[in-house]
Length: 183
Image 1 (cartoon, rainbow, N blue to C red):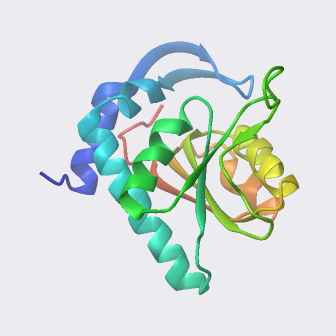
Image 2 (image 1 turned 180 degrees about the vertical axis):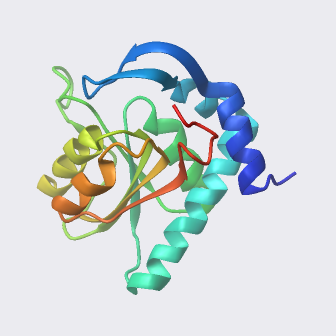
C-alpha cells in the first residue's frame, strides 16, 4: 500500500522524533532529534522513501535535461536509503565512508565510478549539510559530477544555504515543518 506524503511524514515523526536535549553532528544543541535509524530500518517507510527518492531523481533529470548515472549515500545512515532508491530506479549506487578504511583496498568510496559520471547523493537528515558536503567532495575528487543532494529531512538550519554556497543543488523530501516540528 502506498502512503500519501502526509501519511509518510506522520509515520516518520511517529517513529523517529525524539524530544529532550541533544548535541547534533554540527555541534549545535537541539530540543529534538530525528533518529534516522528508527525510520530507515522500518521496511514500510524505507520502501516509500525509495519510491519518493526515485521520483525526485526523475524530476531532476526532466528539469535539468541531465541523465543521472549513479546514486550515492554515506555510511551508515545513507546506505539503506540509497540502496532502496537504487532498487527503485535501477541505478547502481556508491557508498561513501566517513574516512578511508585502513585495510584492504583502503578506499573511502565503495562501488564503481567512471570519471564524469553524474551522481545524485541521497542523505538522511540535513542540518547544516556538513556531512553531505564532505561526501560530495569525495565523489568529486573521484571524478563524479554531483547533480544534486536530496535529503530525507531538512531541519531548516542552513543546509540549503550551505549547499547553494558550494554550488550544489539541494532538495529534501520533507522539512521539519512537514513532520509537525515547531521546536
